Image 1: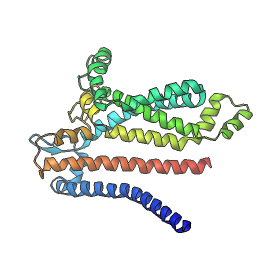
Image 2: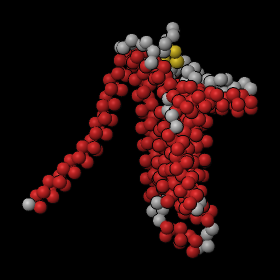
Image 3: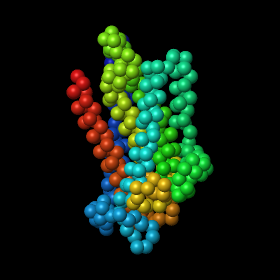
Image 4: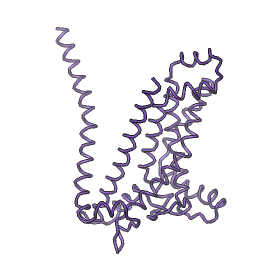
Length: 297
């Protein structure tokens, strides 16, 4: 009796785990189906070439033009600016917590750092509007506009610091202690052990942390909308207002755009573009991780 009951329990657990795995796959397939099916009518009226190479985006005002480059430029500008701030700070914090901090200090510091991840994004947006832009950026750069890409990049960078720090810390601590001890036995100091042993050993985890943070930066909506504004502009000047892919989706979806119009369908075209960007980044990162593991092994 015990053997059949045990097999039944194992079969039930297997079925539950398989169902959990299939939920994510089915959800992803459903998202792709909706994005593609809603984007096809849009691309019947707007050519893919003009969509990808156009330098002007005016989906709601006449004359309507659908060149996605201004939205892409704003998204990349904010995301790259956020990573430029968050990666050094987050990785530095992770290295300190993993290799230098005492156990007591680590116990106190890491939860405080992770609290930043629980702050609502709209709070970060208003923080950029009421403090970063007027009290920092406009004092240093008087020409900075009220809504600008720099303040959006700063607040998004602050938002993703806990993600990078926490995940990198876990990756660094997962490196076997024997590798550290072997390096110390060869007369390496702590900095050399960290740079030449621990970081290479945790490279895949560090890349995964940066990718997760990049995905959040690319998909951030409220903080970017409030801080960067909603002006689709193809510019490299971080002190002017820009619009990202996500903020455009919010702008149109909260308006009075009728269902089935080209303006409505443009939401899904923009969402499909963001999805493909994220997918490409993940594929490239997986190849980098695989190649590094082959070289490191």
